[in-house]
Length: 102
Image (tube, rainbow, N blue to C red; front, side):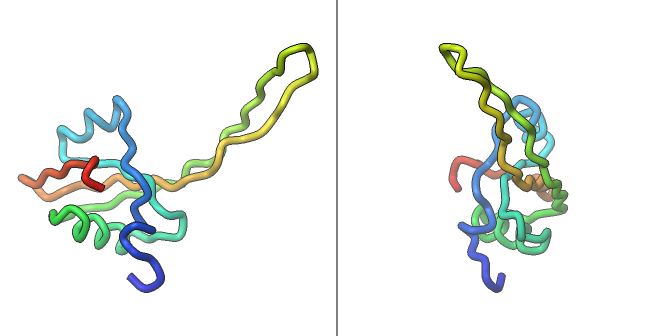
């Protein structure tokens, strides 16, 4: 992985209700570096967790606009969330990993 280390590619596991159900099927979700490709993500997961990866699916999550009011009637503050890239990693049958070991 030229230029990116394992710590740079895999930023954090994403633990939600949907992703917990996917874990039972052997799919795990990670937030990854925006410039990481599928090959780098596969190598990083295999090295970090010592498992065999079957497939990697990626998607770019676009930032959502957020508006919040302030106290005292001083107006509204508008902004947006940051953009991120997610990777759904499917493991080979019989393989499991603990995403908290990252």
